[in-house]
Length: 130
Image 1 (tube, one colour):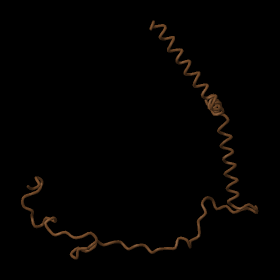
Image 2 (cartoon, helix red, strand yellow):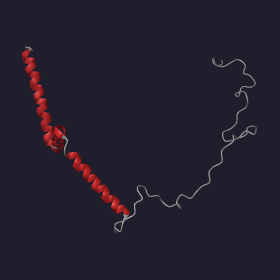
Image 3 (cartoon, helix red, strand yellow):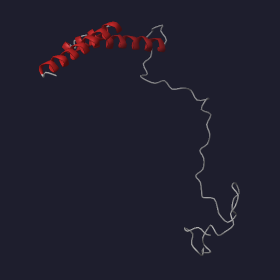
Image 4 (cartoon, helix red, strand yellow):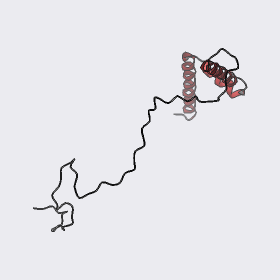
């Protein structure tokens, strides 16, 4: 019994009629495809590092540039924190109050909301005579 998907006669140019080869061997009749040359390797550890950001020099200050950058980042973070808490209006004040709640206060508020919803459902059922 044969395979129902195969053809009765295979042609000579069919690659599967030829004997196979093992993995890892190279055929002698095929030339490898041309490849681009690899770039010359450089020792990346020997190159000096690059400083990111502005190239301002210290004007007589005794602080190292990294300490100055750290101080500037801290000042900017403090300004962002201060500006985010002021001048947000009604919505900002509600958000600040919600952030100030403790876990117990949040649970109590959710509990009160759920009780009010149940009471409203009960009153609606009483109005419909259920």
